[in-house]
Image 1: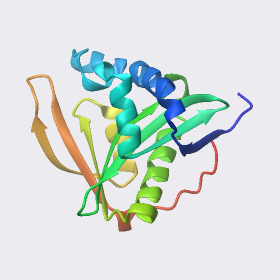
Image 2 (image 1 turned 135 degrees about the vertical axis):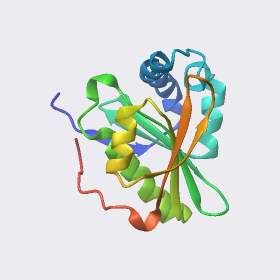
Image 3 (image 1 turned 45 degrees about the vertical axis):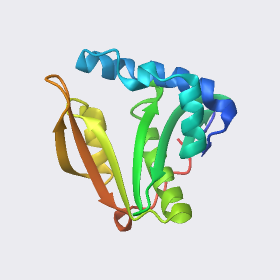
Image 4 (image 1 turned 90 degrees about the horizontal axis):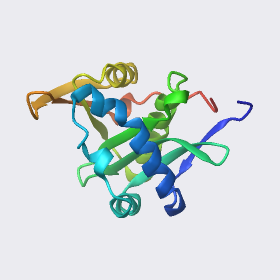
Length: 169
């Protein structure tokens, strides 16, 4: 590729690229669970713009192209909810998902005093489960949403965050 992937805060101008990437990335999740009505595939651009203004959103860029993203909010108790981690299919398996999680954790701890991190994933999402466990997350609960889907909640304390040594992919 010849270019480094950079991670930075998303802007309103990134909304359309994030939404297109989200639609591409969540096709495999929809197929895994046999449900193409999942929220990432039905979210509107207006709803995404609202998320951009309400929480923290980071994007990974390869040149001008948004190739990854992650979103988070922190509640009044210091619990950060991290969601919608996505990496373009052609760049998966190169550590970009881990870099995005590390970057959002660092920002949430430093700027919003996050004390713990929480994320959710489907029970069949093996790649995500492997990544989250490798990053120190542990399952704390499972909720059956339907016959086809159980959602696993994973958490880790902010003190468990490991420093990120990877500057670029």
